[in-house]
Length: 131
Image (cartoon, rainbow, N blue to C red; front, side, top):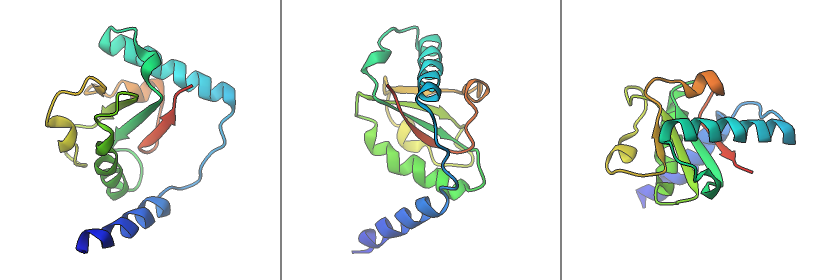
């Protein structure tokens, strides 16, 4: 019963810290997809990016580390989804990334040098739809 109470709390926390959502044009979306695809190819040396439908970016940026932590834990359920790519730019000191460490997942890219942020600066964790 206690776990059921956490779901609305988590939803409120995530919506409260969502901030202003920017409207992105289709061209921006395509540019974002191209940046993610290039990063994926550079990091993995694979050319199978077309199988991904969304990218989940997990980082420690933004004003609400509690939100980033909740986001990280909430989206770990998609680790077995082959159409979801995870880019993790965190060493786990400020947010819990333990679900991603437990086993090898071919859809997880570890950005230990934080180079993804220089290509596509994100002010918070994000889910990006890939065209």
